[in-house]
Each structure stands twice: as C-alpha cells, then as structure tokens.
Amino acid sequence: MSFFSIFYKNNKTSSSAQNKKSNNILSKMIDQDAILQEKLAKLEEQKHLRKLNLLEDEKNMKECEENKIRHYQKENNNDKTIQFLLTDEENTDQLVSSIQKNNLQKQEKFLCHLIEVEKTSKELIK
Image (cartoon, rainbow, N blue to C red):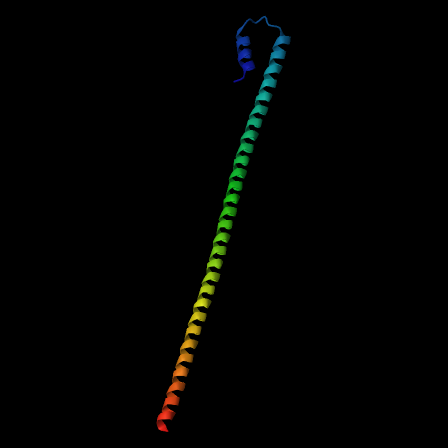
C-alpha cells in the first residue's frame, strides 16, 4: 500500500468541505504513485531476472573452466602415459639388445669351443 493511498483514505474520512481541486491533485498523485509502483515492480523483476542470468552465466563459466582443467589434466596424463610407454620401449629395446649381445657372445664361445674340439679330434686321429 503506497503512502499516497493511505493519505487519500485519511483524507476521505476528513471534512467534506474539501475543495475538488485538491482532491483532483491528490487523485492524480495517487494514480502516478500506482504507475510508479508498477514500474518499480517491473524494474525489481528485471533486476531479479538479470541476477538469475548472471548467476547462470557464472555457473556456466565455472563449469567451462572446470572442463578446461579436466581436459588439461587428461592431456597431461596422456603425455605422461606416452612418455612412460616411450621409456618402456627404450628399456625393452635395451633389454633385447643386451640379450642379443649376450646370445651372440655365447654363440661365439660355443663356436670357439667347437673349433677347439675339432682341432683336438684331428690331432687325436693323426
């Protein structure tokens, strides 16, 4: 209830000798007050809607930032996995190379031993 409407009600109950001009001005002021009250209500509603929109935008921005962080972490984890696999591949290659080298040495020793056995056999036969 507005200030003017209270004043107007109090005025109605007062003396009936009031002139029409002041009554008309008061009526116009009450009408203007009602219009301003409606405009204020609309502005309050707009303010509320803007606040809701800003909160929604803030929520969306936060979600977007969280998605970016998750994406970065996933990318980082992928990079770590790739690095691990590359390192593992290098280690495997080194291990295979070492085993091949060891096998080659064993084959050479075995071949040398066979050559010695052959020489010894020939000497024994003669």
